[in-house]
Length: 370
Image (cartoon, rainbow, N blue to C red):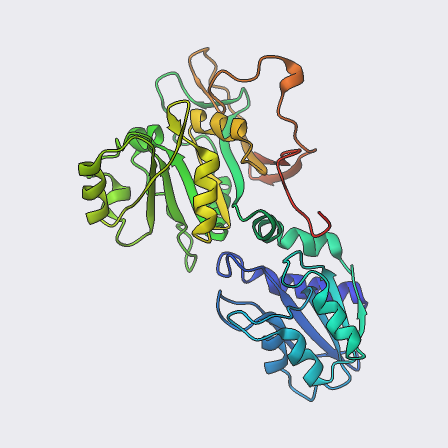
């Protein structure tokens, strides 16, 4: 097998940590000796062994003289685990093949330099695009200290998210809705506005077996959320955050007794400052947020410049009607030249539905080079 094939195997291993390692990166590692795999592993959960140490632990024979394929530059600092570079050097690995450089200031080339200083041959950039894609969230979070935000909407072919009466269940089919839950399972938090909570009384949980539930974040400037809502009633089971900007000490105390964390934040135009909220969520080590509406929050998030990625699910249906709800509310931009610019989409099919996945240009999406 080629270096690329071994690295793609390491990428597949790294994917297994999705949703469980935040705010750490997803990393996979394969150790090859005499053309055969003798050990492999991945970073399984936050705080547990890193991929390199897992792979070395799982070796079926002495790794001295072997090649190591790792999707991200090995760490060289002490955190919840000791440096992986020390373990690689001690094991006598002959060659290390790296996919992505690590933009973490504590690493950022130092890991590769340590390995080379120890006489280990290091090659970088193998399957770089695939390895970088694994850690778009981590690269953004580690360099900005704010969450990577994904804005998600499901709409009809004419761009409607609900009929004029508010009916919206279900626009897309089961396959597309299952994919939404996969995304919920890999992000640290899911966020919606109080309008959605009052209208739909959602749970905002992940319904896939074995997946983790993201922290639920509600933008509720005036603390209008009902104490009988599903979110409040289950706050003791799933971490729930309500972000407000208009103080109501009595309601805040009531919510906190129910297990809800209330963040009192600055306001912008009478609503919670989304930029301030992202700073606070970053301090809480929430590295990613899935924004799930409604239309007013979507527009506010775009206007605030906090969105890095957009997921638009489109169903082969038409609702019509000038009063039917769009995916993006607010006033919108004034001229065509003011439009929010997106990348060319990645197009994915789910049954009869399609997903258009864009990155927002100029929204601070970070790669190891930036």
